[in-house]
Length: 330
Ligand SMILES: Nc1ncnc2c1ncn2[C@@H]1O[C@H](COP(=O)(O)OP(=O)(O)OP(=O)(O)O)[C@@H](O)[C@H]1O
Image (tube, rainbow, N blue to C red):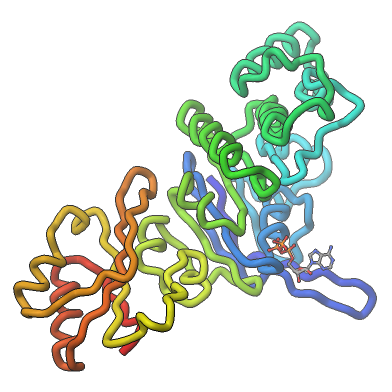
C-alpha cells in the first residue's frame, strides 16, 4: 500500500544543513493503522509530510498504491494527492467558511457538481456526527468538533490513505479518545489505511496495529504494537512504554524485577507458583494490566531477596512461562 525506500530529507538554509531523515525504509499494508512515534525533533513531521510530498524528499522513493510519488509532475501529483487525505494538530480549517463549506472545499477544487457536493457533505457530516453544525463557523466549535470537521474534509474525496499529523495533541484526554474511536471506526468501515504520527504512546496503544520508533531521523525499532510494547528493544522505546519507574528509594532493596505478561501468560497464577517453587517471599511494588487492541499486557514490578544464582533460575522460570523479566536492580 505504502512503500518507502531509502528516504532521506535534508533541509538546507544557506550553508546550514539539517539532516531530518536518514535512509528510512517502511512498508505499510492496506488497512493498517500505522503509528510513527518519536521525541521532539525526531523527524516525524518531516516523514509524514514527505509521504504526500508536502515536503520534498531529498532522496528515495515513496510508493502509494503502486505509484512512485517522487516521479510525479504537478498535474499527476495533484491527482495522486486526492487519494491521500490529511489532518493536522491545529486543524487548519478555513475560518471564514462554514463547516459545510470547509468540507465541500476539496470537492469544489476538483469541480464536483453542486448536487453531489451536497449529498457527499451531508453523508460526511452524519459520519462525524456534526449534521446540526453545518452552518456554523469554526470559531463556534470545540477542539474535538474542529478535528471532526478536519476528518470529514480529509475524507471528502474518498482517499485510500489518511495521514494524521499529531491530530489529537491539542485535545483533552476524553476528546482524544473520541477522535481515536472515530478513526478506528473509519478504518474498520471503509478499510482506510491510516498513518498516525504522535509523541504519545497512549495514541499508539489505542489504535495502531503496527508502530515505528523514530529517533534522530532513523527508524530504530518497528513491529506489531503488542510486541514493541511488551518487549521494547532499546532505551528510547522503553521511555515511551514507561517501563522505567521512579520507585521510592526505601523500596530499592534486594533484587527488583520488571515483569511483562502477554496474552499467553496473563491468565496463569505465575507468581503464586514462583513462591511455592522457590520458597521465597515476593513483594509487589507496582502493577497494572493494559489492553492493546483488546489484548491484555500485565506489568508487574516485584522485589525478592535471593542470591544471583537463584535470580538467574527465577529469570529462566519466567522465560519458560512466557513472561519477560527485566532486572531493574541487582
Ligand atoms: N523547514 C525546516 N528547515 C530547517 N530545518 C527543519 C525544518 N523542518 C524541520 N527541521 C528540522 O528537522 C528536524 C526534524 O524536525 P521534525 O519537525 O520533522 O521533527 P518532529 O519529530 O516532527 O518534531 P516535533 O515533535 O517537535 O514537531 C529537526 O531538527 C528540525 O529542527
